[in-house]
Image (cartoon, rainbow, N blue to C red; front, side, top):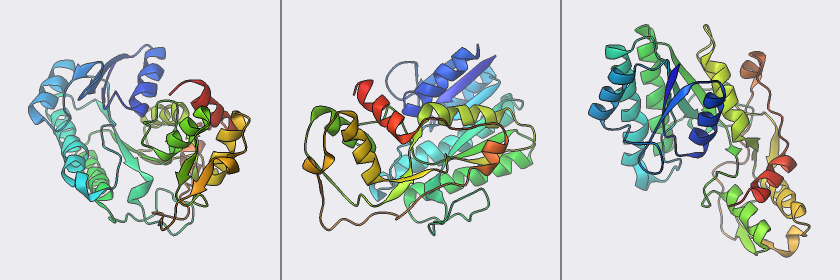
Length: 286
């Protein structure tokens, strides 16, 4: 059994690779840099040649620059939207039995503070959401042509593999080093799920025959202040002596939480608590 992972060098690609290898799946990891096969999912010829040659049982599209900044409008479009079309058309032409997984995001939904599920309307409020929404509609179109296309909508998930620019990793690193740090609005509430468990939900989803789209999140919501406290408590420090709040900061949302009833009904259950995740991110290096 064989799988291709586009975006294998990121956090999710790392954990998915290890999960699949434990399942005795041969993994072809593709990224623009780092280990594995060097390639760009936005390169149609490269993608088509790879899928035509390998004809894998599974293809996972995880490649993206996960930021909502307008400056990366075209980069997001190329990796997410164009990448999706490149994969799906190559599958249609050369490997129609390949199961394709497309990563979606909590940030492409309308958010009124209530738990978000698969029936929540989309909202194209930033370039990142635009690309994600286009990718989903492309997936639905190709599914109507008979291809097994899955979409998992990721809510916040973390691990020691998080990049240092991400606020949760930034806080964990500062706690570990005993550094002072200024944070935006720490009353914002979101989920803190372990990425290794998130990719286990992906694997659960692509094994289904009748369910093709699912929200992937814990449904457990915590404030950023709780995360700060968990991180500094792990190293035995009082966070109030190290963390200050930035002035004139406007958060993108007040609360972002999922309703994961569907994915849980398929047998998946997140188990790592926020305190365990903080300990993991601090103890396992930077």
